[in-house]
Length: 314
Image (cartoon, rainbow, N blue to C red):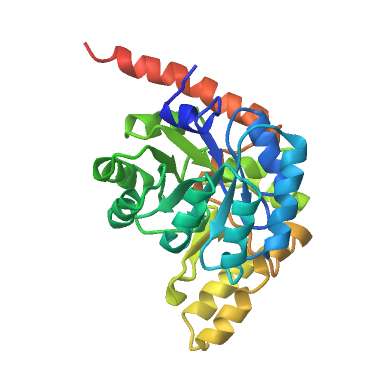
């Protein structure tokens, strides 16, 4: 069985994180992943502190394994969510969409292991100086907010730039991706899109069906004009937004156009006005299965690949 230093640090069986997907990764999904031996992560997104507290309590009622919370630093509720995770004794915090420096001392004093998502060497070096436990190097293949560098380019550069354990993310959904991440120097992986097809994932059936039926050119990136590029499935909404982005529409109207679009996809399955976030790897996700089965399956697939790769060196 593949184990790495991140398993020892966090007390998990498999070096697999479940991505913090806003309005999707709730307490139920996080607990299912943690019970399967990975690290389940609750997404705070733009939700207020009490919602996050509620999801933490749900997760704790369903598992005694470590569970994390992902905090989006652009959220208007980030300060209260930062306090909630400290009060609730969350074992791990991952962060995205910004610099978590302001909250690092609070979390570390509460005994929380802080693992920021980074998309550049500079941010990895800063997080190393601030005493992060590890970093997640996330390539542009991922769903949701994305950076510029691909996973295969980003991960080895981050590994060279820090002494911290590196978790690879972006474009990983099976054992081949896991094996590739380890060969690049990572000691674990984070998967988001693969868990959209978990039985415990609460997204609308229309959303789940779109993931299962996705093809190789299924996604597109919008939002670059406003400085927050997002990868999602190609839908009438994403195509309309792309046209608006390159029109003369004022920035405030463009931002308003996207407000609530993710929730409309997650809750209503609205193909016309919903934004269905997904990574490029959606094309290989072809079945719905329990979260624990997903975790075990990708690791079981990766092990013989890594063994075979090592046998090629004479």
